[in-house]
Length: 509
Image 1: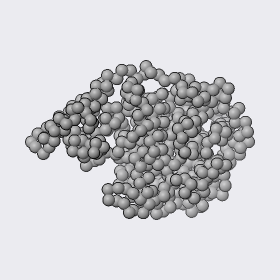
Image 2 (image 1 turned 90 degrees about the vertical axis):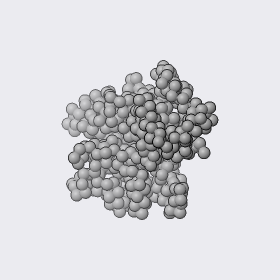
Image 3 (image 1 turned 120 degrees about the horizontal axis):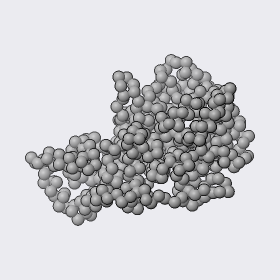
Image 4 (image 1 turned 180 degrees about the vertical axis):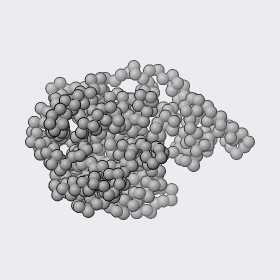
């Protein structure tokens, strides 16, 4: 896929000697602001610098509405600089996604970073409705079909698109379930069309090594760009307290940034130097490139980062011990290599006690295996009983009985296209703020949901613990849960299953 795509950014990703550099830009509120003009001025300077291959443009970062990214993107493309546009699913249903993708393809905006997106925040007359009709894995699958010109369902013959799809991944998860579910999702992303990876924000060399080692061990032919983010004091505080989902600044690092802020420049030079050291480490670890970012960065700041990193690259191993900002109780996927300060190839011990017995899950799974697979012993009788009620005066009673039963047990939202059997009997329609069917998102922190920190556990942490209790955690690497079929809303998923109307029933054919 990558080799067929000829833009400078795409070509750099498949050139072994090329260390790709991209820079994240955030569109302003409105299209006629001074901030927008400053962004264009910076982009113009970057376009003249051969060390920079592309800029990426966020889409409603932090859940706040801003100028649509393709507008800024087109202006920057006209300067001769490649543009990566973030494509999130939080504000758009699948029809709007297709429409927008057709438009971007026509405009020549074809380099994407496919993400789920941050939960919507307050806007006009209150908080916006979160859409999340598709998750990031669904979007990858959709765009892969668009690239082939092969949708299925009688929609073949549409001219193929040529999108390049980056994905985000965070190795910076404190708990074992969170981390392993991030890597499990990477398998699904790779299987559905991901072309390259950009990491989330963190400042631990061993964690960066963990990710690149995992990618290599599992045979993913995906270039990886490490995130080098230079925060100011305000943003550092927000990241430290979890107000910016997925971005991790530990207690030790935040204390150091606070001390540095007492200097005349409020610590900016120290933060830039830290970024340059991380950049040098990424080069040494064999990353394909780096994704730079940070509020208020000037061209001179970027030049300092790149120039200083080059001067430090020859001694990057010595910098590893300086870039160890991780939680003391934080989980690593591999054991530590005492000689290098990085990782060995040996897996770290797993916490087998964390999962518990999971009696409720085991019982639900037992009932499911008795009736709701084609080979199940009770399948013929249950199918006959449900089909006998179809269209009759007890039809609605069946729907209500199912809904009440599953609501009491699982918080069922009566979607009619049940995924409980796919997701360890945890309902994403009620249990996940983003309704993710191929989760998790990258925003969880210490096992808590991004949207309800300290109040609601991440659904995919719960799923991992249930699967681990039965020795099945690796199962989340496989399979694909299709998006919800809204035509089935408020109908009986039992009946839909036996009629072959829902995704599970279709799989029985």
